Image 1: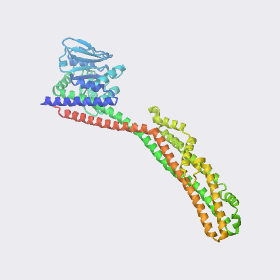
Image 2 (image 1 turned 90 degrees about the vertical axis):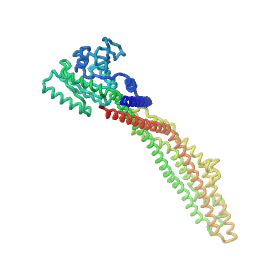
Image 3 (image 1 turned 45 degrees about the vertical axis):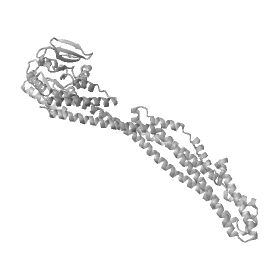
Length: 541
């Protein structure tokens, strides 16, 4: 039953590894260790011996093998991974430039494959690379340190790396024959304390002398007992440790990528907020400009009212019969400089409106300047480049002509219908002169009526109402046209502005969503691996 349960767990581990390899591949991560772990599930138990050069790894292996089969020395004697397997005769089979399979007639190798690794202290840099790359394959790691220089800084760093793979580990202090009893106790206490601090847990610790054989039997018994009782569970747990190591690294990288994308999306939100502020401020300031335009109309109206009060009275009844003189008087006292004032106010408003998009692009560039350092670290900042290009190619003059054309089109069939043919400035002139002619005709008609009937107050009031109505109609028509032009300009500006960054932001949002899905998938895989590992550890005899 135990065998069947372990086989089911083995199937679960294989499935989990295959899923993880697929996910990590999608993320562009190197999954060679996991593929190797999947293959190693079907292979022999791997006991990996690691340590700094001259710590006595080869001599310890010879002691475990029961005979001096491996070369020993005070200088690095192993410059490649050596997989030690059982064979009736000593034989060597190359496994590539960095590894070799060595068959030895040693009974221990019938149940376990030993792995001899180069030194971990990077005296020869390639040695450490070989050792660290083979670390994920270990089912059990024996880490050897020397009693005359125990637990060096480079050994501490290597064990910190081991910790990330959740590998079963035993520490071996070799060469204790160099120390007296007090020295041995001191070294034992020091290595135990330092290893627990580095690994965060207690691990088996053996003091041995591979040269004299002292303590080797205890280490042999530990290995034999482990192989007899827990080899299958450890074999299944080994790839889970590798898997969790890779998942932790992948999740950390995903977190960095998500954070970077969130920063990019924050820029997108900042640009959207910038547009909202720009639109609100444009509307508010445009209202102020319309108020200034209205003030020009109010001034015309006040002058008109004064003109009526001064000129349209019984004492001037015969003057009013001279239409040409009335018209000249009205133009001089009422219209005066109104044409220029209206044209200037209108032109200034349209030019200001056309420049607003340029101001928006400049503000967007200023906003993105705060991202300059991070953008340079990522490479070319496409958003800034596109904004700069849009700013270079934007023409306020051309935009003003476009807006003016929209105003003229909107004024057709209104009190300023002439604008459709001759433009706004000329239309204003025609309207004002037409207003003068209209008032001239009214007042001349009024004077003629007065000669027959004394109805001056009523006729004067009617003429004044007509003057005010014509003026109000023209003002309203002009404002409607300007407001329509404002809406059209804001719509165009928004479309152009959002077209610069929306495709990039939408793509980033889609990537962010996919990364969130991958985060959830990796978290689920990690949870499954942890549950399986906990179950295997709980089932130890």
